[in-house]
Image (cartoon, rainbow, N blue to C red):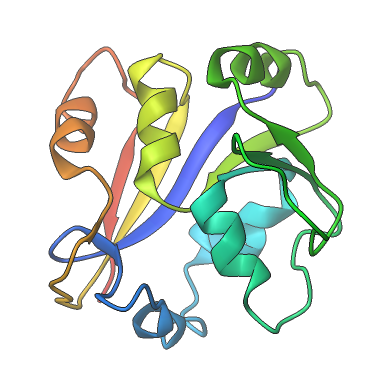
Length: 168
């Protein structure tokens, strides 16, 4: 059975993207070596990447090549995706998707991107583990990752596999 994991970075004020929906603030930390927690090491254990439509659109609009050619990709959306940037499946029912992901046995599942989809999985008890990296930046704006539910979950003793790690 696949483990469904979150791996996400946020600013000190709990934001993922800046006020212009930009991640440049985060990319300047790409060279940081996090050892066993490094993104490149993490990605090697991932067979399936799940993202919401906003994250997909963000990645699809980036001129860089499709980064997930080696993974199965699922985009959760109710709208069709015309001319996808890379191979992917489209799903629109979170509960059915969770059941499908639980049946996977060829590697772990990464909940990529913003907080809305991760929160939907957390509310259903379907996010097995989450690594949250707090980056020493203050962004302001409204790219929040849902800090109150996340805070409650991370302090919930019935969800012991959560990890908090601060960088910088």
